[in-house]
Image (cartoon, rainbow, N blue to C red):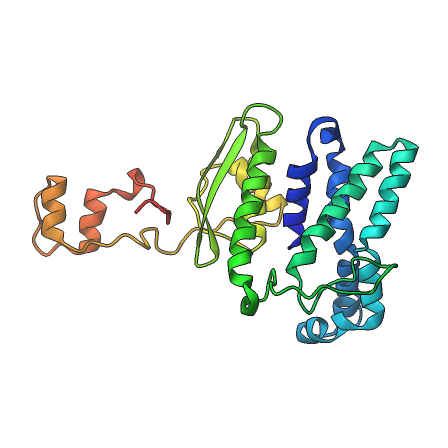
Length: 281
């Protein structure tokens, strides 16, 4: 699974009851098994200038890097950490270890050639799953779509956990690309909505949706590295197929030599119409 999905899953599964206040420890634990991956990428890409293809096809499988990845993905080590945290009475440390272990357990059935030795130091065995969370040759396309939808559903739950719903976003997937079909927020919760949208955009680097007439939301998205851009054609999916039929249905008189675009502007004035790609056809 991708790292953002692990964070959301950890929050949904573990951030309940007495552990609700440990959201930071849970998020950190969910991130911990992937931390060496970030170090690996920074060293090889930025430090040594290795090309992307070489990084993921060869350098990733270097025995030295693999040992580091395996240590941070060891279920026995996180189990030991949980035992120590329990004996010390540290619920935050216990939540951290539980989130890290959950990360490992969900990775176990979803890695093939890039599998980790999850039972180190007792065994170096790696489970080569028939399913890959990313490789389209082994169900990757389907899983990416399911993971994205599950991540968004989890983020929605997190946004409303502390009481009333303060923000919402509904996404659909079109050929594995997210479309923000609709979203909204209460007056004082722009950050909650920005976090929801950022979670939806993260996996694919962007999404289509209605342009937010909301300067505060645009600023909150910009702070997360997300730029709002308008579509070149505001009627990109709106076309007139039957001018006479449209005039009859709209109750307007046809105008000689009027183009289809002018007719649409007359029937659906842009200043009074909002259109966006959605699932409501």
